[in-house]
Amino acid sequence: MSTSPTIRLGYHGIIYLVGAVRIGVVMLFLPVLAGALSAQQTQRFDRPALENTEDRTESLANHLLELSVATRQKDHESIAAFFSASFSSDPFPSTPGDEKRIIKWIFEHGWSAGLAKGKPKGRAEFLESFHAFLDHFRSIDDARFKVKSSAVATDGRTATGLLKLFLVGRDREGRREWVRGLGDFRAQRQKDGKWQFATLNITEIRSQIAIEDLFDEVGGPIGFTATDSSFLSKPGRGLLSHGAAAADVDNDGQLDLFSPGIDRNFLYLNKGKGVFEEVASKAGVEISLHAGIAALFLDYDNDGDVDLFMSSVGDQMLFQNRLVPDGRLFFLDVSEQAGVSIPAYGFSSVTADINRDGWPDIYVASYNNFGKVVPDSWYGATNGTPNLLFINDGNNRFREAAGQWGVRDTRWSYAAAFADIDDDGDLDLYVANDFGGGNSLYLNQLVQGEQRFIEAAEERGVLDKAYGMGVSFGDFDNDGDLDLHVTKMSSNAGNRILNRLFPGMPADQVFLKKLAAGNSLYENLGDGKFKDQTADAGPFSAGWAWGGGFIDFDNDGREDLYTPNGFLSGKTMKDT
Image 1 (cartoon, rainbow, N blue to C red):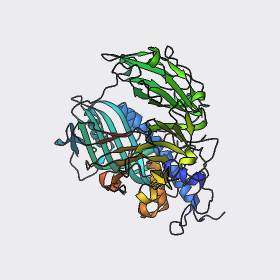
Image 2: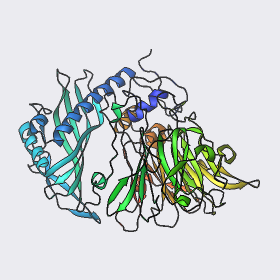
Image 3: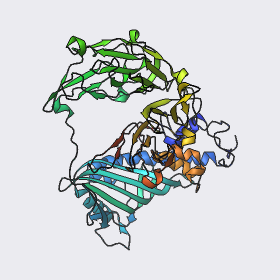
Image 4: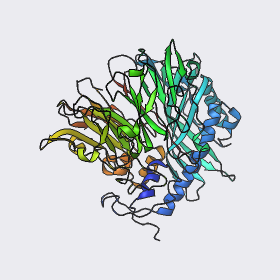
Protein backbone atom coordinates (compact mmCIF):
# COMPACT_ATOMS: atom_id res chain seq x y z
CA MET A 1 0.00 0.00 0.00
CA SER A 2 1.22 3.45 -0.85
CA THR A 3 2.15 5.69 2.05
CA SER A 4 0.11 8.53 0.58
CA PRO A 5 -3.14 7.16 -0.89
CA THR A 6 -5.97 9.34 -2.05
CA ILE A 7 -8.45 9.62 0.80
CA ARG A 8 -12.01 8.53 0.07
CA LEU A 9 -13.64 8.02 3.42
CA GLY A 10 -16.30 5.36 3.89
CA TYR A 11 -18.00 3.54 6.75
CA HIS A 12 -15.42 3.64 9.50
CA GLY A 13 -13.52 6.56 8.03
CA ILE A 14 -16.17 9.22 8.37
CA ILE A 15 -17.59 8.16 11.71
CA TYR A 16 -14.18 7.71 13.30
CA LEU A 17 -12.96 11.02 11.96
CA VAL A 18 -16.06 12.98 12.84
CA GLY A 19 -16.59 11.79 16.35
CA ALA A 20 -13.77 9.54 17.50
CA VAL A 21 -16.94 7.70 18.23
CA ARG A 22 -19.10 4.64 18.74
CA ILE A 23 -16.63 1.81 18.30
CA GLY A 24 -12.95 2.64 18.55
CA VAL A 25 -9.87 4.66 17.72
CA VAL A 26 -10.20 7.33 15.11
CA MET A 27 -7.60 6.22 12.62
CA LEU A 28 -7.56 2.44 12.91
CA PHE A 29 -9.52 2.07 9.71
CA LEU A 30 -9.83 4.19 6.57
CA PRO A 31 -11.45 1.78 4.10
CA VAL A 32 -11.86 2.98 0.58
CA LEU A 33 -15.35 3.87 -0.60
CA ALA A 34 -15.44 5.88 -3.80
CA GLY A 35 -17.66 8.90 -3.87
CA ALA A 36 -17.50 9.95 -0.21
CA LEU A 37 -15.70 13.12 -1.21
CA SER A 38 -15.78 15.10 -4.42
CA ALA A 39 -12.67 15.48 -6.53
CA GLN A 40 -12.21 19.01 -5.18
CA GLN A 41 -12.36 17.76 -1.60
CA THR A 42 -9.92 14.88 -1.91
CA GLN A 43 -6.26 15.31 -1.16
CA ARG A 44 -3.26 13.15 -0.63
CA PHE A 45 -1.83 12.57 2.80
CA ASP A 46 0.76 10.50 4.59
CA ARG A 47 -1.49 7.94 6.21
CA PRO A 48 1.06 6.36 8.60
CA ALA A 49 2.13 9.81 9.76
CA LEU A 50 -1.48 10.88 10.27
CA GLU A 51 -2.29 7.73 12.25
CA ASN A 52 0.86 8.18 14.33
CA THR A 53 -0.03 11.81 15.08
CA GLU A 54 -3.58 11.01 16.12
CA ASP A 55 -2.53 8.00 18.22
CA ARG A 56 -0.08 10.21 20.14
CA THR A 57 -2.67 12.97 20.42
CA GLU A 58 -5.29 10.59 21.74
CA SER A 59 -2.74 9.27 24.23
CA LEU A 60 -2.17 12.82 25.44
CA ALA A 61 -5.92 13.56 25.49
CA ASN A 62 -6.56 10.43 27.56
CA HIS A 63 -3.80 11.33 29.99
CA LEU A 64 -5.30 14.79 30.39
CA LEU A 65 -8.43 13.12 31.73
CA GLU A 66 -6.37 12.31 34.82
CA LEU A 67 -5.38 15.97 35.09
CA SER A 68 -9.08 16.83 34.81
CA VAL A 69 -9.91 14.53 37.73
CA ALA A 70 -7.03 15.88 39.82
CA THR A 71 -8.21 19.43 39.12
CA ARG A 72 -11.77 18.57 40.09
CA GLN A 73 -10.47 17.17 43.39
CA LYS A 74 -7.97 20.01 43.92
CA ASP A 75 -5.29 17.36 44.31
CA HIS A 76 -2.23 19.60 44.15
CA GLU A 77 0.28 16.75 44.32
CA SER A 78 -1.27 14.91 41.38
CA ILE A 79 -1.60 18.14 39.40
CA ALA A 80 2.10 18.88 39.86
CA ALA A 81 3.02 15.54 38.24
CA PHE A 82 1.75 16.84 34.89
CA PHE A 83 4.36 19.62 34.74
CA SER A 84 8.02 18.91 34.05
CA ALA A 85 10.83 20.11 36.29
CA SER A 86 12.00 22.41 33.47
CA PHE A 87 8.49 23.84 32.90
CA SER A 88 8.44 27.54 31.97
CA SER A 89 5.38 29.65 31.08
CA ASP A 90 3.43 32.73 31.99
CA PRO A 91 1.48 32.31 35.25
CA PHE A 92 -2.03 30.90 35.15
CA PRO A 93 -4.59 33.77 35.30
CA SER A 94 -5.94 33.61 38.85
CA THR A 95 -7.36 37.07 39.60
CA PRO A 96 -11.01 37.54 38.56
CA GLY A 97 -11.81 40.78 36.78
CA ASP A 98 -14.81 43.08 37.12
CA GLU A 99 -18.18 41.44 36.62
CA LYS A 100 -20.52 42.57 33.83
CA ARG A 101 -24.17 41.54 33.51
CA ILE A 102 -24.87 39.82 30.19
CA ILE A 103 -28.43 38.61 30.78
CA LYS A 104 -30.95 38.77 33.61
CA TRP A 105 -29.17 36.50 36.09
CA ILE A 106 -25.83 35.84 34.38
CA PHE A 107 -22.66 37.90 34.87
CA GLU A 108 -19.32 37.53 33.10
CA HIS A 109 -15.75 38.39 33.99
CA GLY A 110 -12.27 37.82 32.67
CA TRP A 111 -9.15 36.75 34.54
CA SER A 112 -5.72 38.28 34.90
CA ALA A 113 -2.44 36.87 36.11
CA GLY A 114 -1.70 37.47 39.77
CA LEU A 115 1.98 37.58 38.89
CA ALA A 116 3.42 40.03 36.38
CA LYS A 117 3.60 38.82 32.80
CA GLY A 118 6.64 39.17 30.63
CA LYS A 119 9.41 36.92 31.78
CA PRO A 120 8.24 33.26 31.83
CA LYS A 121 7.89 31.70 35.26
CA GLY A 122 9.11 28.33 36.44
CA ARG A 123 7.11 25.30 37.52
CA ALA A 124 6.67 26.36 41.15
CA GLU A 125 5.36 29.82 40.30
CA PHE A 126 2.99 28.47 37.65
CA LEU A 127 1.60 25.87 40.03
CA GLU A 128 1.19 28.54 42.70
CA SER A 129 -0.90 30.63 40.31
CA PHE A 130 -2.94 27.60 39.21
CA HIS A 131 -3.65 26.68 42.84
CA ALA A 132 -4.70 30.28 43.48
CA PHE A 133 -7.13 29.94 40.58
CA LEU A 134 -8.58 26.74 42.05
CA ASP A 135 -8.86 28.35 45.49
CA HIS A 136 -11.37 30.75 43.94
CA PHE A 137 -13.83 27.84 43.94
CA ARG A 138 -15.59 26.53 47.01
CA SER A 139 -16.36 23.33 45.09
CA ILE A 140 -15.73 21.99 41.58
CA ASP A 141 -18.34 19.84 39.86
CA ASP A 142 -16.43 19.22 36.65
CA ALA A 143 -13.18 20.19 34.97
CA ARG A 144 -11.87 19.18 31.55
CA PHE A 145 -8.72 19.66 29.51
CA LYS A 146 -9.07 18.74 25.81
CA VAL A 147 -6.69 18.82 22.87
CA LYS A 148 -8.18 21.10 20.21
CA SER A 149 -5.30 20.83 17.74
CA SER A 150 -1.84 19.31 17.81
CA ALA A 151 1.33 18.47 15.95
CA VAL A 152 3.62 15.63 16.99
CA ALA A 153 7.36 15.43 16.35
CA THR A 154 8.64 12.58 14.22
CA ASP A 155 9.98 10.78 17.28
CA GLY A 156 6.46 10.80 18.78
CA ARG A 157 7.69 12.21 22.08
CA THR A 158 6.91 15.91 21.74
CA ALA A 159 3.49 17.41 21.02
CA THR A 160 2.54 21.03 20.50
CA GLY A 161 -0.86 22.53 19.94
CA LEU A 162 -3.93 24.21 21.35
CA LEU A 163 -5.72 23.15 24.52
CA LYS A 164 -9.34 23.79 25.53
CA LEU A 165 -10.30 23.88 29.18
CA PHE A 166 -13.49 24.36 31.12
CA LEU A 167 -14.52 24.18 34.73
CA VAL A 168 -17.91 24.25 36.44
CA GLY A 169 -18.21 24.84 40.16
CA ARG A 170 -19.20 27.20 42.95
CA ASP A 171 -17.21 30.32 43.72
CA ARG A 172 -16.41 31.46 47.26
CA GLU A 173 -19.84 33.09 47.50
CA GLY A 174 -21.55 29.85 46.48
CA ARG A 175 -22.54 31.10 43.04
CA ARG A 176 -22.50 28.77 40.06
CA GLU A 177 -19.52 29.57 37.80
CA TRP A 178 -18.52 28.26 34.38
CA VAL A 179 -14.97 28.86 33.15
CA ARG A 180 -13.85 28.41 29.54
CA GLY A 181 -10.34 28.93 28.25
CA LEU A 182 -7.76 28.23 25.56
CA GLY A 183 -4.03 27.78 25.83
CA ASP A 184 -1.08 26.77 23.69
CA PHE A 185 1.15 24.00 24.96
CA ARG A 186 4.22 21.89 24.43
CA ALA A 187 4.15 18.46 26.06
CA GLN A 188 6.70 15.66 26.26
CA ARG A 189 6.06 11.95 26.61
CA GLN A 190 7.97 10.25 29.39
CA LYS A 191 9.49 6.77 29.42
CA ASP A 192 6.46 5.43 31.28
CA GLY A 193 4.18 6.67 28.48
CA LYS A 194 2.73 9.56 30.46
CA TRP A 195 2.91 13.16 29.31
CA GLN A 196 4.19 16.28 31.02
CA PHE A 197 3.79 19.91 30.00
CA ALA A 198 6.98 21.79 29.18
CA THR A 199 4.97 24.96 28.49
CA LEU A 200 1.32 25.95 28.91
CA ASN A 201 0.33 29.54 28.18
CA ILE A 202 -3.32 30.47 28.75
CA THR A 203 -4.27 32.80 25.90
CA GLU A 204 -8.02 33.21 26.56
CA ILE A 205 -10.10 32.64 29.69
CA ARG A 206 -13.50 33.93 30.83
CA SER A 207 -16.13 33.03 33.40
CA GLN A 208 -19.90 33.19 33.49
CA ILE A 209 -21.59 33.39 36.90
CA ALA A 210 -25.20 32.63 37.76
CA ILE A 211 -26.37 34.82 40.62
CA GLU A 212 -29.50 32.67 41.03
CA ASP A 213 -30.02 28.91 40.90
CA LEU A 214 -32.99 28.36 38.60
CA PHE A 215 -33.13 24.60 39.04
CA ASP A 216 -32.38 22.09 41.80
CA GLU A 217 -32.35 18.30 41.59
CA VAL A 218 -35.32 17.20 43.71
CA GLY A 219 -36.27 13.88 42.10
CA GLY A 220 -35.39 11.69 45.07
CA PRO A 221 -37.06 13.78 47.81
CA ILE A 222 -40.34 14.14 45.88
CA GLY A 223 -40.67 10.42 45.15
CA PHE A 224 -39.00 9.59 41.83
CA THR A 225 -37.59 6.18 42.75
CA ALA A 226 -36.48 4.85 39.34
CA THR A 227 -32.80 4.03 39.05
CA ASP A 228 -30.77 2.34 36.36
CA SER A 229 -27.36 0.71 36.34
CA SER A 230 -24.55 2.10 34.21
CA PHE A 231 -24.55 1.57 30.47
CA LEU A 232 -21.36 -0.49 30.50
CA SER A 233 -22.74 -2.87 33.13
CA LYS A 234 -25.31 -4.14 30.61
CA PRO A 235 -23.29 -5.29 27.58
CA GLY A 236 -26.29 -6.90 25.88
CA ARG A 237 -28.47 -3.85 26.21
CA GLY A 238 -27.57 -2.24 22.90
CA LEU A 239 -27.44 1.46 22.11
CA LEU A 240 -30.82 2.21 23.63
CA SER A 241 -32.10 4.70 26.13
CA HIS A 242 -35.58 5.49 27.41
CA GLY A 243 -37.45 8.75 27.57
CA ALA A 244 -40.36 10.10 29.59
CA ALA A 245 -43.67 11.90 29.03
CA ALA A 246 -45.84 14.12 31.21
CA ALA A 247 -49.62 14.48 31.21
CA ASP A 248 -52.53 14.68 33.63
CA VAL A 249 -53.49 11.00 33.50
CA ASP A 250 -56.01 11.08 36.38
CA ASN A 251 -57.70 14.37 35.45
CA ASP A 252 -56.94 16.06 38.78
CA GLY A 253 -55.42 19.15 37.20
CA GLN A 254 -51.79 18.21 37.93
CA LEU A 255 -49.13 16.81 35.63
CA ASP A 256 -48.04 13.21 36.15
CA LEU A 257 -44.98 11.47 34.72
CA PHE A 258 -44.45 8.18 32.90
CA SER A 259 -41.06 6.64 32.12
CA PRO A 260 -40.55 3.35 30.23
CA GLY A 261 -37.59 1.11 31.02
CA ILE A 262 -35.83 -2.14 30.17
CA ASP A 263 -37.19 -4.30 32.99
CA ARG A 264 -40.25 -2.29 34.01
CA ASN A 265 -42.06 1.01 33.55
CA PHE A 266 -42.77 3.76 36.08
CA LEU A 267 -45.86 5.93 36.45
CA TYR A 268 -45.68 8.75 39.00
CA LEU A 269 -48.93 10.41 40.07
CA ASN A 270 -48.64 14.00 41.18
CA LYS A 271 -50.25 14.17 44.64
CA GLY A 272 -49.69 17.91 44.97
CA LYS A 273 -47.39 19.88 47.27
CA GLY A 274 -44.32 18.45 45.55
CA VAL A 275 -45.05 14.76 46.23
CA PHE A 276 -45.35 11.92 43.69
CA GLU A 277 -46.54 8.33 44.12
CA GLU A 278 -45.35 5.49 41.88
CA VAL A 279 -48.45 3.56 40.69
CA ALA A 280 -47.40 1.70 37.52
CA SER A 281 -48.43 -1.69 38.89
CA LYS A 282 -51.86 -0.52 40.08
CA ALA A 283 -52.42 1.29 36.79
CA GLY A 284 -51.53 -1.75 34.66
CA VAL A 285 -48.41 -0.39 32.96
CA GLU A 286 -45.54 -1.69 35.10
CA ILE A 287 -44.78 -4.48 32.63
CA SER A 288 -45.30 -4.21 28.89
CA LEU A 289 -44.92 -6.81 26.16
CA HIS A 290 -41.86 -5.00 24.78
CA ALA A 291 -39.47 -2.52 26.32
CA GLY A 292 -40.81 0.92 25.50
CA ILE A 293 -38.29 3.42 24.17
CA ALA A 294 -40.35 6.61 24.17
CA ALA A 295 -43.74 7.43 25.66
CA LEU A 296 -46.43 9.58 24.05
CA PHE A 297 -49.69 10.69 25.69
CA LEU A 298 -52.72 11.41 23.51
CA ASP A 299 -56.50 11.03 23.76
CA TYR A 300 -56.79 8.71 20.78
CA ASP A 301 -60.46 7.83 21.49
CA ASN A 302 -61.54 11.42 22.30
CA ASP A 303 -63.22 10.36 25.56
CA GLY A 304 -61.66 13.04 27.77
CA ASP A 305 -58.72 11.18 29.32
CA VAL A 306 -55.19 10.70 27.95
CA ASP A 307 -54.09 7.34 26.65
CA LEU A 308 -50.54 6.05 26.34
CA PHE A 309 -48.61 5.10 23.20
CA MET A 310 -45.14 3.58 23.45
CA SER A 311 -42.77 3.36 20.51
CA SER A 312 -40.64 0.27 20.84
CA VAL A 313 -37.93 -1.94 19.42
CA GLY A 314 -40.47 -4.55 18.43
CA ASP A 315 -44.22 -4.13 18.10
CA GLN A 316 -45.57 -0.68 18.89
CA MET A 317 -47.92 -0.45 21.88
CA LEU A 318 -51.09 1.46 22.82
CA PHE A 319 -52.73 1.52 26.25
CA GLN A 320 -56.27 2.84 26.64
CA ASN A 321 -56.92 4.87 29.80
CA ARG A 322 -60.06 3.47 31.42
CA LEU A 323 -60.54 6.44 33.75
CA VAL A 324 -63.39 7.25 31.39
CA PRO A 325 -65.80 5.45 31.52
CA ASP A 326 -64.78 3.18 34.46
CA GLY A 327 -63.96 5.96 36.94
CA ARG A 328 -60.66 4.26 37.89
CA LEU A 329 -57.20 4.92 36.53
CA PHE A 330 -56.16 1.81 34.65
CA PHE A 331 -54.41 1.38 31.30
CA LEU A 332 -55.60 -1.48 29.11
CA ASP A 333 -53.29 -2.85 26.40
CA VAL A 334 -55.25 -2.43 23.14
CA SER A 335 -52.29 -2.64 20.76
CA GLU A 336 -53.66 -5.51 18.68
CA GLN A 337 -57.25 -4.30 18.59
CA ALA A 338 -56.17 -0.75 17.69
CA GLY A 339 -53.92 -1.92 14.83
CA VAL A 340 -50.62 -0.44 16.10
CA SER A 341 -48.89 -3.74 16.93
CA ILE A 342 -46.50 -3.36 14.02
CA PRO A 343 -42.74 -3.99 14.35
CA ALA A 344 -40.28 -1.12 14.05
CA TYR A 345 -37.16 0.20 15.68
CA GLY A 346 -39.26 3.01 17.13
CA PHE A 347 -36.99 5.58 18.77
CA SER A 348 -39.68 8.25 19.20
CA SER A 349 -43.20 9.20 18.21
CA VAL A 350 -45.28 12.35 17.76
CA THR A 351 -48.98 13.00 17.34
CA ALA A 352 -51.13 15.42 15.34
CA ASP A 353 -54.41 15.45 13.44
CA ILE A 354 -52.84 15.47 9.98
CA ASN A 355 -56.06 15.00 7.98
CA ARG A 356 -58.11 17.40 10.13
CA ASP A 357 -60.86 14.86 10.87
CA GLY A 358 -60.81 15.53 14.62
CA TRP A 359 -58.86 12.40 15.56
CA PRO A 360 -55.16 12.38 16.56
CA ASP A 361 -52.78 10.41 14.34
CA ILE A 362 -49.32 9.05 15.27
CA TYR A 363 -45.95 9.12 13.47
CA VAL A 364 -43.12 6.80 14.58
CA ALA A 365 -39.47 7.62 13.84
CA SER A 366 -37.79 4.26 13.28
CA TYR A 367 -34.03 3.64 13.55
CA ASN A 368 -32.23 0.30 13.17
CA ASN A 369 -30.17 -2.13 15.22
CA PHE A 370 -26.88 -0.23 15.20
CA GLY A 371 -23.98 -2.53 16.02
CA LYS A 372 -25.60 -5.49 14.30
CA VAL A 373 -26.81 -3.63 11.22
CA VAL A 374 -24.19 -1.55 9.42
CA PRO A 375 -25.41 1.73 7.87
CA ASP A 376 -25.02 1.48 4.11
CA SER A 377 -23.38 4.91 4.13
CA TRP A 378 -21.93 7.21 6.76
CA TYR A 379 -22.95 10.26 4.76
CA GLY A 380 -26.31 9.16 3.36
CA ALA A 381 -27.59 5.99 5.02
CA THR A 382 -30.94 4.67 3.79
CA ASN A 383 -31.07 1.17 5.31
CA GLY A 384 -32.90 2.05 8.50
CA THR A 385 -36.25 0.47 9.30
CA PRO A 386 -39.33 2.13 7.74
CA ASN A 387 -41.03 4.92 9.65
CA LEU A 388 -44.69 4.38 10.49
CA LEU A 389 -47.75 6.61 10.18
CA PHE A 390 -50.86 5.50 12.04
CA ILE A 391 -54.03 7.20 10.76
CA ASN A 392 -56.81 7.26 13.36
CA ASP A 393 -60.02 6.00 11.79
CA GLY A 394 -62.12 7.27 14.68
CA ASN A 395 -63.46 3.87 15.73
CA ASN A 396 -60.69 3.00 18.21
CA ARG A 397 -58.56 1.71 15.35
CA PHE A 398 -55.56 2.95 13.39
CA ARG A 399 -54.34 1.98 9.94
CA GLU A 400 -50.69 2.19 9.00
CA ALA A 401 -50.43 4.51 5.98
CA ALA A 402 -46.86 5.82 5.80
CA GLY A 403 -46.46 4.61 2.22
CA GLN A 404 -49.78 6.08 1.11
CA TRP A 405 -48.90 9.46 2.64
CA GLY A 406 -45.31 9.50 1.28
CA VAL A 407 -43.47 9.27 4.61
CA ARG A 408 -42.33 5.64 4.68
CA ASP A 409 -38.73 6.75 5.00
CA THR A 410 -35.96 4.21 5.56
CA ARG A 411 -33.28 6.61 6.71
CA TRP A 412 -32.13 6.14 10.31
CA SER A 413 -34.74 8.38 11.93
CA TYR A 414 -34.36 9.61 15.49
CA ALA A 415 -37.02 12.24 16.10
CA ALA A 416 -39.82 14.17 14.42
CA ALA A 417 -42.09 17.15 15.00
CA PHE A 418 -45.31 18.47 13.47
CA ALA A 419 -45.79 22.16 12.67
CA ASP A 420 -47.61 24.27 10.09
CA ILE A 421 -44.54 25.36 8.12
CA ASP A 422 -46.26 26.90 5.11
CA ASP A 423 -49.10 28.53 7.08
CA ASP A 424 -51.84 26.80 5.10
CA GLY A 425 -53.78 25.48 8.09
CA ASP A 426 -52.59 21.87 8.08
CA LEU A 427 -49.64 20.28 9.86
CA ASP A 428 -46.37 19.50 8.13
CA LEU A 429 -43.71 17.07 9.37
CA TYR A 430 -39.96 17.42 9.97
CA VAL A 431 -37.83 14.33 10.66
CA ALA A 432 -34.25 14.24 11.98
CA ASN A 433 -32.16 11.45 10.46
CA ASP A 434 -28.82 10.03 11.57
CA PHE A 435 -25.73 9.16 9.48
CA GLY A 436 -25.73 12.11 7.13
CA GLY A 437 -28.75 11.05 5.15
CA GLY A 438 -30.27 14.49 5.35
CA ASN A 439 -33.38 15.43 7.28
CA SER A 440 -36.89 15.42 5.86
CA LEU A 441 -39.41 18.24 5.62
CA TYR A 442 -42.74 16.86 4.46
CA LEU A 443 -45.32 19.46 3.44
CA ASN A 444 -48.95 18.39 3.93
CA GLN A 445 -50.65 19.07 0.59
CA LEU A 446 -53.43 18.02 -1.75
CA VAL A 447 -52.05 16.16 -4.75
CA GLN A 448 -54.62 15.35 -7.48
CA GLY A 449 -57.36 15.54 -4.87
CA GLU A 450 -55.58 13.28 -2.39
CA GLN A 451 -53.97 14.55 0.79
CA ARG A 452 -50.35 13.44 1.27
CA PHE A 453 -46.91 14.68 2.29
CA ILE A 454 -44.44 16.09 -0.26
CA GLU A 455 -40.69 16.12 0.50
CA ALA A 456 -39.38 19.69 0.45
CA ALA A 457 -36.37 19.82 2.81
CA GLU A 458 -33.81 20.83 0.20
CA GLU A 459 -36.16 23.27 -1.51
CA ARG A 460 -36.96 24.95 1.82
CA GLY A 461 -33.33 25.07 3.00
CA VAL A 462 -33.44 22.55 5.88
CA LEU A 463 -31.99 19.36 4.41
CA ASP A 464 -29.15 19.54 6.98
CA LYS A 465 -27.07 16.50 5.97
CA ALA A 466 -25.44 15.54 9.26
CA TYR A 467 -26.11 13.28 12.25
CA GLY A 468 -29.63 14.42 13.13
CA MET A 469 -30.74 13.54 16.66
CA GLY A 470 -33.53 15.92 17.68
CA VAL A 471 -35.90 18.52 16.29
CA SER A 472 -37.91 21.36 17.80
CA PHE A 473 -39.84 24.38 16.56
CA GLY A 474 -40.02 27.79 18.23
CA ASP A 475 -40.08 31.48 17.36
CA PHE A 476 -36.57 32.52 18.40
CA ASP A 477 -36.71 35.92 16.64
CA ASN A 478 -40.25 36.77 17.78
CA ASP A 479 -41.49 37.53 14.27
CA GLY A 480 -44.58 35.36 14.50
CA ASP A 481 -43.49 32.31 12.53
CA LEU A 482 -41.87 29.03 13.57
CA ASP A 483 -38.11 28.62 13.36
CA LEU A 484 -36.30 25.28 13.53
CA HIS A 485 -33.61 23.90 15.84
CA VAL A 486 -31.94 20.58 14.97
CA THR A 487 -29.71 18.83 17.49
CA LYS A 488 -26.78 16.93 16.05
CA MET A 489 -23.23 16.22 17.09
CA SER A 490 -20.11 18.28 17.58
CA SER A 491 -16.78 16.61 18.22
CA ASN A 492 -13.55 18.09 19.48
CA ALA A 493 -11.59 15.04 18.28
CA GLY A 494 -13.42 14.92 14.95
CA ASN A 495 -12.75 18.57 14.15
CA ARG A 496 -9.14 18.16 15.20
CA ILE A 497 -8.63 15.38 12.67
CA LEU A 498 -10.62 17.00 9.89
CA ASN A 499 -8.54 20.15 10.23
CA ARG A 500 -5.45 17.99 9.69
CA LEU A 501 -6.96 16.38 6.61
CA PHE A 502 -8.24 19.65 5.17
CA PRO A 503 -6.01 22.41 6.56
CA GLY A 504 -7.34 25.90 5.93
CA MET A 505 -10.41 24.71 4.08
CA PRO A 506 -13.71 26.21 5.34
CA ALA A 507 -16.57 23.96 6.40
CA ASP A 508 -18.72 24.88 3.39
CA GLN A 509 -16.07 23.30 1.15
CA VAL A 510 -15.64 20.12 3.21
CA PHE A 511 -18.98 18.49 3.91
CA LEU A 512 -17.39 16.18 6.51
CA LYS A 513 -16.81 19.23 8.72
CA LYS A 514 -20.55 19.84 8.89
CA LEU A 515 -20.98 16.37 10.35
CA ALA A 516 -18.96 17.43 13.41
CA ALA A 517 -20.05 21.07 13.62
CA GLY A 518 -22.90 20.83 16.15
CA ASN A 519 -26.55 21.89 16.22
CA SER A 520 -28.30 23.99 13.57
CA LEU A 521 -30.70 26.91 13.91
CA TYR A 522 -32.87 27.87 10.93
CA GLU A 523 -34.82 31.11 10.64
CA ASN A 524 -38.21 30.95 8.97
CA LEU A 525 -38.20 33.76 6.40
CA GLY A 526 -41.98 34.04 6.54
CA ASP A 527 -42.76 32.16 3.37
CA GLY A 528 -42.02 28.68 4.70
CA LYS A 529 -38.42 28.86 3.50
CA PHE A 530 -35.53 28.93 5.94
CA LYS A 531 -32.14 30.57 6.34
CA ASP A 532 -29.33 28.93 8.30
CA GLN A 533 -28.56 31.30 11.19
CA THR A 534 -26.29 28.90 13.11
CA ALA A 535 -23.09 30.90 12.65
CA ASP A 536 -24.66 34.27 13.50
CA ALA A 537 -26.82 33.15 16.43
CA GLY A 538 -24.46 30.45 17.76
CA PRO A 539 -22.53 28.40 17.09
CA PHE A 540 -24.20 25.60 19.06
CA SER A 541 -21.47 23.11 19.92
CA ALA A 542 -23.14 20.79 22.39
CA GLY A 543 -21.11 17.60 22.15
CA TRP A 544 -23.12 14.51 21.28
CA ALA A 545 -26.50 16.24 21.40
CA TRP A 546 -29.89 14.53 21.56
CA GLY A 547 -33.34 16.08 22.03
CA GLY A 548 -34.11 19.28 23.88
CA GLY A 549 -35.68 22.35 22.37
CA PHE A 550 -37.01 25.85 22.85
CA ILE A 551 -37.99 27.13 26.29
CA ASP A 552 -38.06 30.63 27.79
CA PHE A 553 -35.88 29.98 30.86
CA ASP A 554 -35.72 33.56 32.09
CA ASN A 555 -39.31 34.61 31.29
CA ASP A 556 -38.17 37.54 29.17
CA GLY A 557 -40.41 36.71 26.22
CA ARG A 558 -37.62 35.24 24.08
CA GLU A 559 -37.12 31.55 23.35
CA ASP A 560 -33.94 29.98 24.77
CA LEU A 561 -32.49 26.58 23.79
CA TYR A 562 -31.79 23.52 25.91
CA THR A 563 -29.81 20.52 24.66
CA PRO A 564 -29.03 17.32 26.60
CA ASN A 565 -25.89 15.53 25.47
CA GLY A 566 -23.37 12.78 26.11
CA PHE A 567 -21.99 9.50 24.77
CA LEU A 568 -19.03 7.12 24.99
CA SER A 569 -16.22 7.53 22.51
CA GLY A 570 -12.55 7.10 21.77
CA LYS A 571 -10.32 4.04 21.86
CA THR A 572 -10.31 4.10 25.65
CA MET A 573 -13.70 5.86 25.95
CA LYS A 574 -11.96 8.90 27.39
CA ASP A 575 -11.22 11.19 24.46
CA THR A 576 -14.76 12.51 24.12
